[in-house]
Length: 338
Image (cartoon, rainbow, N blue to C red):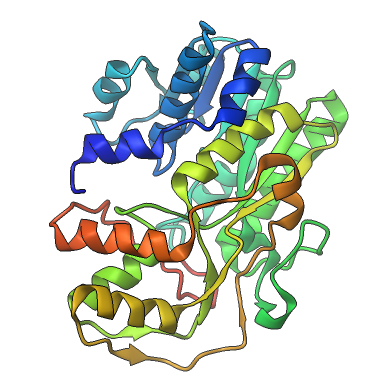
């Protein structure tokens, strides 16, 4: 499969639990930061689940839209695009009200060298959003990077583990969580915070970074020797389901795949699938950025798409000439610089 429309249809396919939840819970949904990697398919999934449930609701996607084609693509599938700079108070105040907010805005790539903007987007903006939507429930995206490196033998960081962020990106994301938690407590805003680690699809993600280097026969850095990955369609569904599990103070969810993958093993599998010789560089370390999602699965469901299936889909996409998003994850970074 190398057709983008078909791919995005797959990535936005709603699950039965999500359809049931959106049938029971009414109200419009605003996705702040819809222009990112997950936003378009998450918003479309919310729309499709609502239509299947027979519920009429507005799904509104807000972004600066650096991709000028995206607003038309969203409109085509029934999502209302609104162009806005969320750091501009006038733009933020002009957004419509809604009982359900999904906060996906933030900055990671290019954060090194733009530390001030990174902190503004990741830490200052959440407070502005809480002031704008004090009567809504909010699902806010964060990252497993806030935990820092953890021994592979421990099975991944859990929601109850103390944060240990490294670098401006991870520290500012912990700041995002702290600001959301403050306003949740002070203003009784029900929230869920999604610590994602890491969503993948054929155009983007840790597995895509590895697969493209295998395909181009470039050496793969195995310094960060392990990772979690989750299929983006399942991450979308779990994050939307979290709208029904918001609390004050916030409820935290590790949205991560159940498998801890070894980068060396995945690269060698791609080598077999693609008929390529695999090259490695760097020295494997016994710790990595890993999250344990077992407590999340009890409420939001256990992921069903395993790494071998993801690898086959990604290999087929790349070998078929499918386009990528050209946004390397830099998952191999061990110093917190992105």
